[in-house]
Image (cartoon, rainbow, N blue to C red; front, side):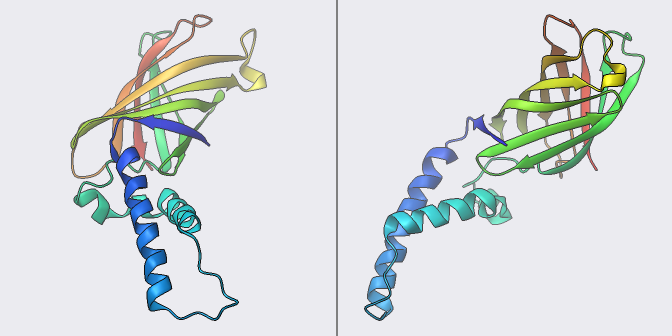
Length: 193
């Protein structure tokens, strides 16, 4: 997994809220709970580290935080069916494969597995326009399976997908393009499996 960028202010505000909560938790522990002398009270830094880890892995997915606007980061975790068309086939042939997205609040990994090739994200970003529009963009390194490689074995490319609202986030559409070694581009759609 690698870090991804996002244009939401939550990456500034949430750590501030966690720092305040850490100080409050430590203060409450010291004043409300009588501990034996040999049991140390955790510091605000230790409490902050624990809160940050919990938030990064689990808490950011809570629907309540989305409803009140604390978290805007979309949860894209899971398996997706990815269908592409290519300029090489003049958009007449549809290629399908499986896209696996693993995501925390700060890290992401996008792994595509098709019949001819696999690819892995190198960097990614999420651009939130408003409550009903965001874009997911990632650069990938694609490797052909040995039996399909011929002369070109791997290449870099970029995929841009967009979600334009709706009740659920089950489908995103967009396009892709490859580096100068292949000069290909096409359309992409992913559907939650």
